[in-house]
Amino acid sequence: MKVVLLVVLIGLCGSGALGEESDFFDFPGSETNADVSAAVEELRAGLKTVTDRVAAAETKLGELEKQNAGNWSVSGSGSESGSHLMDLKDVSQLFTRTSHISTPKVAFYTALSNAGNIGPFNTDIPLKYQKVFTNIGQAYNINTGYFTAPVKGAYYFQFTLAGFQSFDTGVYVIKNGQIFMYNVEYKRTYNPEYITNSLILELQPGDTVSLVLPRGHSTFDNPNNLSTFSGSLLFTL
Image (cartoon, rainbow, N blue to C red):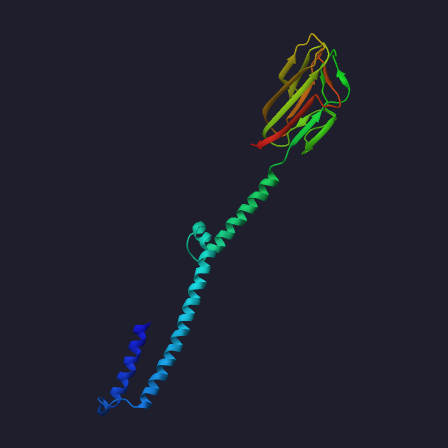
């Protein structure tokens, strides 16, 4: 800025010399000094205004760079970076909402009853778990004892049976009316025994899973919820 001011002053002096060649070597009078001083002050005022504007512009530019720092890294340079970032946010929110709608929440937890000893019988007996503590998605039917898969997916199941008689304690895991698993605890005393197991099944919509007490076997439950059946959807397929 100092160089520009010096050039301007030289230009002013030169213009005066060209106007009157006869006064080239004359010392300037007081009136000329006053004119130059006024011009210098005017230049200083203009220079200060420009300097203030440049400083304000630099401050504003710094603020904009901070605000847009994330935009450039996501969508590159260009005037549309902000709108691109908003588009990504909209897509993410839409995906989240769609995922919540398309993937049902399925989980249940039940206990058998408060009847005490159940069995043995001379035929297989479906176990209908009457104490339902959790049934998210309503996939477990208390009237039939069946769990019905609402969607194709991988499902986790767990069961526990207690036995307090001298009869064998056992259970069938039934999938779509067919025996899928058989667990048994052979008993010869009245000491309490437990069977517990878990499994993961790939099910189609409408597939059913239930538990059956085999003939000649017994189980036990009371208010302590010793015999339980539970399951949940792990993920859809």
